Image (cartoon, rainbow, N blue to C red):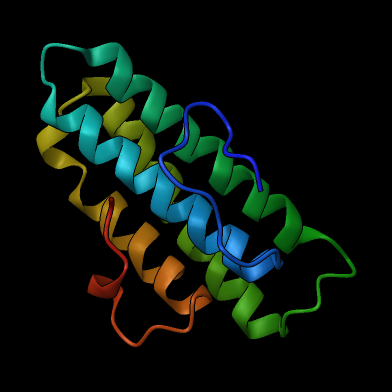
Length: 126
């Protein structure tokens, strides 16, 4: 598979779970990189907007009538996505890269679950 410009890695398997886990890990990686470069608030803004777009895609998929996930899991993930919306909006309002930890934790926890890992710490930004 040819690498896309702008990505440090690509999902290994071509299944939806692996792709979603990779997307969350990549979004986390971009946040970490942007937060380390405190003088470039636009890169942090772009990383936060990417996270927002990703979670909006998840929300849309979870809201579909034909979503194959059990209702309780869907409802829990939708509630988590609302928390993520709040976190991202708070960070967009002040662009303080030192406060991205809750976003990273949620991204990594969901990515780890999608990838079948036992611990959220197992999925790290590369």
